[in-house]
Image (tube, rainbow, N blue to C red):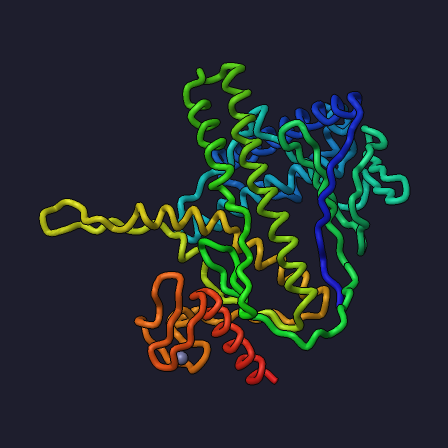
Length: 390
Ligand SMILES: [Zn+2]
């Protein structure tokens, strides 16, 4: 069994290469905006839609008209057109679904920061020398902190603040089955502590947000006071972005480490399938009899929403799943209903069993941390599912 995986590395370009990246980003932004203009124009004047395929064919005409655009190769240009195509596909899909569509927008100088090489031409990664060769730029040093497995198919280069990163998308990544441990674990994804396990462990993630928040809020307040279009505003914007990146990095590191530990130690991992998008939906206002609005718990829920996003459950689960897949482990999602009200000792179900963070069974007296008790129920539900499937 094999799968696909993305590896992300930091690039260490020379100052000449940095300048080349800036130039390339500028040219690709121009191409993106021109291609968007073409699509808009055709639709407006001819009611005709232009496809990705049409636009890639037109790239050859650039050879005489704008040779500078092609000086970094045609692959990266196709990547930009593909990105526009995806933006349009998203737009059409949202239209169809009756959501707020959001027409693809022109990109300003600061908002175009990523480049894609959509096939294996125009670039080569040498793992022995730690160099990424890019057509038109040269050999760029890559900090390869881990080795790549599988076959590299496409790359994406992104500027984040002052740094450039390369993401290498690999296919046919061979599975690396781990020896069996004969252990199973249920995990409860809580709000306060990120993960409670059926073994009784509470794995406290970094308080994403909360710690980083003071700095972020200050940076945001600072940004609001700056004159639009000014240099200081640009700098303040960079500071806000840097705070966001830092929080995201900490979250990702934690998710990586914790999912790795769970997968290494257990043959079966069971989690509750909380539909995260449902849980984080904005609460509807509730009109009262007098024509005003009753409190709808929006404030409490906003706090909870933030915690849910902070905890980064979706990311954590997807990391667990792909690591498990590669290691030959089993991951099962179960219905979260009643997991917090049921006694993991005797199966008694009652809302009265729960006292805040403590679970105390009214029937058998079993006492545990509420999330650990829930994790026990989750594991049992997963084992039952496994039996039915077998
Ligand atoms: Zn009980």
